Length: 458
Image (cartoon, rainbow, N blue to C red; front, side, top):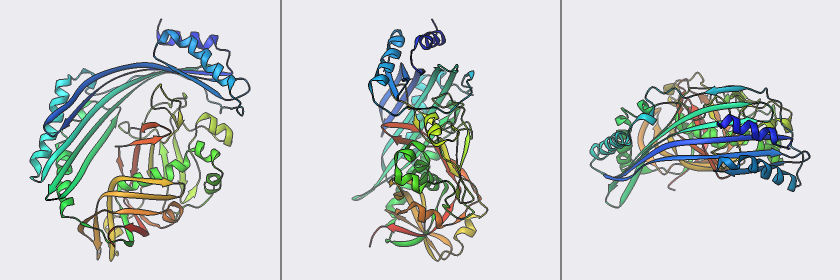
């Protein structure tokens, strides 16, 4: 019996008010080099399912499994869980049922590339890093691919089959001079793309090595308040972490303070600032799919338009609670997890200012590039840039390091005084939330922010 028959048969026997079933088959491979040593080369195959039910008077019950012969039993268990808990009655926003199959179309399907060929490509990138700079004494390179095939059906008549290819590539170099050790990495994530995306990436490996060496020459930044220019990569991370999570509506309706902060119509910045989240952008972006994990079509959602809050991100449940339309943002890491409201590809839209004009009148500032990590708490944030330069008299000057940017989101967005005309995507990223890590895309042009607190040497 095929997956569709299994799912439709189990749905027809369910006594729940609403039932959804997601079966997944995931095939992948992984290669890791540490220095010149091949640390791992493996292929994997995983299969399992997730069932979620709504009881007639309450909330969700769920069950996961690996044995497909247990599907009907697991539907009963999920309903029993839903009936056992005391919860407010969950309503779902209306969605038109669909029946569709969307298979992957890759120029060079990595499922047909031998593992030894993947090892050879990664080995070459690793050797490029070791050969580029004498100071690079250690490297780590990771290649991983997977095709996650999702079979989704619900009791409202939706049936979806979608193949979701994903490739990750990471090159990290460690440079050493005496007691000083500095690292730099280049990471890439490609969705809906074949193995051709990995070939010809030697320039990325060289960049990682050269930036690690450059960090040895960088001096710690002097702490203070500066105008700061964020490059597209770091600006994309900033808008994702500091603003995107506040736009996820499960967070909004569970948090009274967030409801006040994220009220529709609130001004968040100047008219030059517009922010959106989309599952429809470039097919190679990791947040781009045809449907989310509730069978809702992906869409483009405007969050901020000309500085004004105009939208937020929804599952079917949060859309019903807030009386808004579902946006296709219910995403699950795999069959072991329920869908949560998650970003897809979040970005600041392009403006009109050139990079040269953006820095031309900066007497003393910081040019911060890429992210090395950070944290947010409602409106407050702290980010470390991967590398940075001082700006002196309108010119990019010497490299600096240990740059930590901190502030309040709402004040910082008001202080965005220039948005560049040089938009680009940074398609490398995983977003963590409630124990799940999802591939996401982030994008932005360069942006200029006034009066940013920069931590560093005193």
